[in-house]
Amino acid sequence: MEVFLMYFLFAVGLVLIIKGGDWFVDAAVWFAEVSGIPHFIVGATVVGFATSLPEVIVSVIAAAQGDVDMATGNAIGSVTANTGLIMGISLVFMPLAIKLKDYLPKILILFASIAAIWAFGITGEISLIASLALVAIFAFFVYENIKSAKSGISETSESESVEAFTRAVVLKKIFLFVIGCAGIIVGSELLVNYGTEIAASLGVPTRIISLSAVAIGTSLPELVTTISAISKKQSSLSVGNIIGSNIIDISFILPPCMLAYGKSLPVSAGTLWLDLPVLFGLSLLAFVPTFFTKKFSRWQGVALLVCYVGYLTYMFISH
Image (cartoon, rainbow, N blue to C red; front, side, top):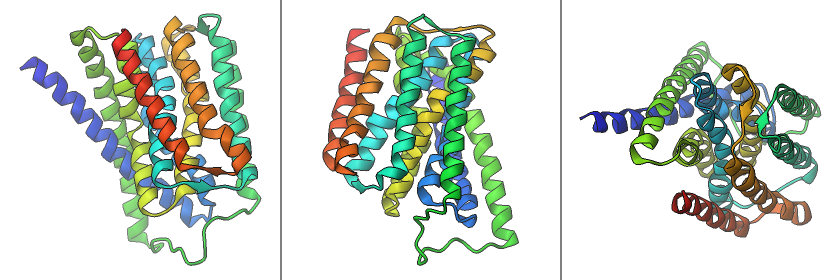
C-alpha cells in the first residue's frame, strides 16, 4: 500500500504541474498579448518564466532539503529535455524560418550560460562567485529582451485577435494564474519528495531520476506550450519559449539553490563530464546549423530526439 501511495502521489504531482502549468501559461500569454508584445519575446520572457517555474521550485525545495543531486540534476536535466525532447518534437512537426537578428542574441546568451556553468563546475562546486556570474548573465538576458520588446518588432498580424478585454475575462485570467501557480508549487513538492523515494526504492541514483523523470516532469509545461503552439501554428512562440526557458533554467535556478542549501553546491563528475557535454552537443545541433540556413529544419528535430533517447538509454544502462 505504501509503495502504491508513493507512485500515486508522484503521479498526482505530475498532473498538478501539467494542469497548473497549462493554466499558468494560458493566463501569462493572454496578459502578454493584450499588451501587444511580439510573440517571440512573449515566448522567451513571459512564457519562459511561467514554464520554468516548476524547475525553479523543485530545485530550490530539493536544495533546501539538502538533496543537491536533485537540485542540480533537475536544472541541467530540464534544459537537456527542453532541447532534445521538446524542441525536437517542435521541429519535427513545425520547421521554422527565422530572422537571425531576433534569435542570435538569445542563442549566444544560452551558450554563454552553458559555458559558464561548465567552467565553474570544473572546480567541483557552484560557489558564490559562480552564482553572481550566472545572475549577471540572467540580468543581461532580461535587459536584452526589454530592448527587443521596445524595438517595436511585432510578429502578431492584424488578423490575430485577443480574447475580449472585459472585467470577467480579466478576473478569470487572474484566477487561472493564481490557481495554476498553486498547482505548480504543490505538484513540485510532491515530485521532489516522492521522486526521491522512488529513486531510493529502485536503487537508481537520485541524479539519474532527477535528470530523467523529474526533469521531464518539470518540463511538461514547455511540452504543453509546444503542443499548443503547434496546433495554433505559432512556431516562434514555441522556440522562443524553449530558448528563454533554457537560459532561465541555467542562469536563474542554481543561484537561489545555493542560497537555499546554505553553501556552495557540489557538482558531480557525472554532471561535469556527461550531462553538461551532452547538453552542449544538443545545443550545437539545435542552433549552429540555423546560423547558416536561417531556419530550424525537420532533420534537426529528428536528430535531437534520437540523441536525447540515446542519452537517457545510456544513463540507465550504465548506472
